[in-house]
Image 1 (tube, helix red, strand yellow):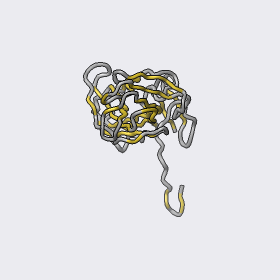
Image 2: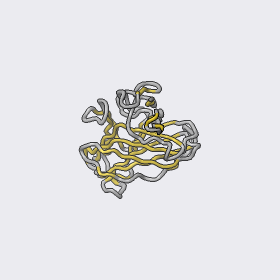
Image 3: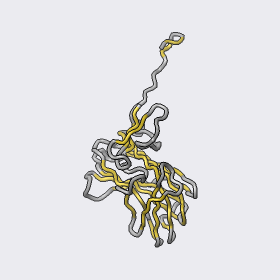
Image 4: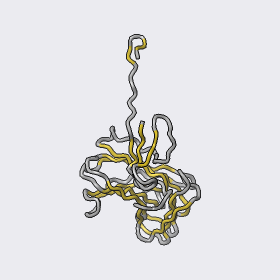
Length: 211
């Protein structure tokens, strides 16, 4: 369109994928894992999205107590950005994230990337984020959420319990072309430039946002 002799730029809106294969616990806990001694449960109390979230509880004190999601991807992605909502139930008052990866979908040792910044968590939801390069050969990701007693520590007191919900995993080849990990899934209502759909079984697959 010409306005005063100038061409008005066209804003490009690109599709986005949430690679989390069970992002919000509406159906089950498939693809989620936790450190030994942890007990997971779907709960309906104060979810971040939908009608359920996941509670994880560790009866004994310990170090690096976590819950995380396994995700299988095709090789060729070399940058990850991820986010997840976290809230405290009892005990640990801080949370941080980490990404493990390997170049085979089922076997081999995981390599772990850097820890995210730690954030304080309370009874309300807080969103953790992380972003960094991964090898382009990666086929298996595990996005991990740790809860801790202090911002810089790695321990939790006995009985620590926290809830998580709404994981978004964005992948690209550079920081610049990897979408920001703003949460969506296949049940997200149409909004703005996008409509949303599940790529497979609802609640148990990746999701796509299409212009």
